[in-house]
Length: 517
Image (cartoon, rainbow, N blue to C red; front, side, top):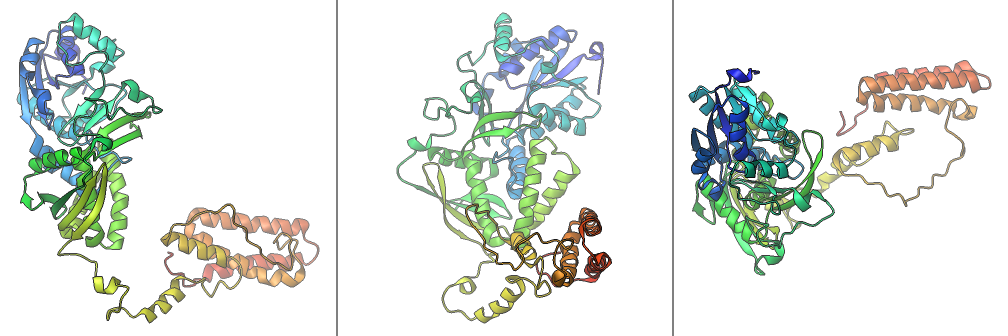
């Protein structure tokens, strides 16, 4: 909602005490009629970053500071739904993405309580967070004006921000040499800027002070650490036999994983706003939980559910990354996931060693794995002779395609179930009586009759592509008719009849093709 500056008397500011929000307080008062600024810090696990925040906010011009403990809300209502869905974005475990709607929802509540005229955030116009904050605010406080200083002020860089802070005597915890852009919460720590803006450079993992949640794999212990995690309906509830509430559990696994060099991610990701950005992430506890949850699902979910869930996981990750938490689709995916997680209960043991997570055992009362059936030894449940029928149905070209397109249909069927690869160096030798181009317009009369099966089988294959397939069929058969009329030598009507009788036969032809619609 747009409001004139003169109508804005009180602003609620998303306040972290970092560089951006530190200078926003005096800037708001200078540019918005000396308005009252109410600072709000959502504690989602920033730790010591919140120390001394109230004094700093008041000294720089805020009328008051709210420090809201959102850690439990963040873990249980934002992190757990993503974990259960296996949601990630290009391998990124969404540490900033799902924290923003949690904080923004709290901002909306305070703004209503304070009867504020506007809500302000310090997100840059280049980043994703502006979208995450504002979409949440539009969903939960649609009548509230939104102020985004980075889209208004003349400041163009973090160096200029530091200049502004120094001119206004605002104390900072950073300097120009250590000016990484960082975001820390209970789930992760992100690093951007400085040397990390060059993808050609390796992150300085071993430099003292670079990593905050753990150590590099090289500095991890030479002895592996085992950890057992218990899940109830997809939610972790205990570690090594000790029950823990949600926040405690994440904090414990952060320490355990960090000490073993777990959860480091260096990626160039595709930002929502249309650019690529390089980020280095520390997510030790989150990496352990995602791995353990994935292992547990391998024995508790059936094949069709697992494969379909994987498709939804990608969509869920995109929605969260793009700031679309408070949308019907995100809520629907979460509802589906919750239902599917009813059997995701059990214990997973992982071996942590120098940045690696190695499976070390999984059990569940709802396991679908049957040792006797899967065994290579003798069993009573599985009659190996039954495989003959399966292979006859699935593993061979269908009998009705005895000529033309049988190889094509067969490979398409295989590709739906199994990965296929191109081997450029391979060569296939196909002995043919007529080595020329296979074309009814130019082929010898003795071969014309078999072309009926060519045009019949093509219908079966192309109609699976819907309208585009039918259009292609009609265009192809029409073109072949033109070729017969143009290039054919005698008996043209006979060949044209073969083309279209084959097409008509294909319309009525419905062979049994396993695993294809």
